[in-house]
Length: 82
Image 1: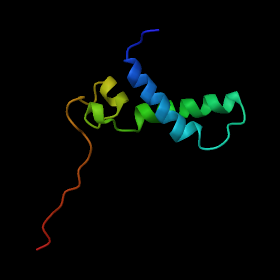
Image 2: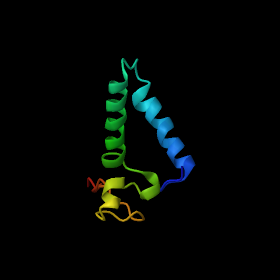
Image 3: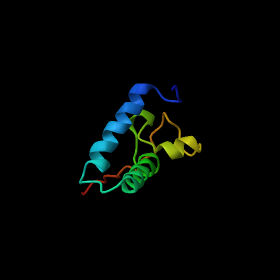
Image 4: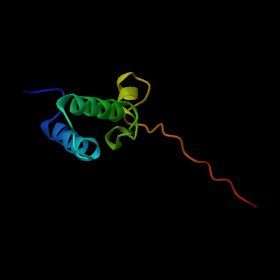
């Protein structure tokens, strides 16, 4: 079924979710699997910066708090020591 994202993107997200969350250890039941998948979805969209949207978070871009072409991450200021 077509959706808002290309198929390749959806497949990449699923592959990453499998290895970062779902295959860490044995999943005892379907409810635990659903809980882990939801936890990953929330982290993926709210906490994790994405390279494709200038290292912003998807939720921030969606809400208009960040521009998908301009990075908003904090940079460390390095000052001279002498």
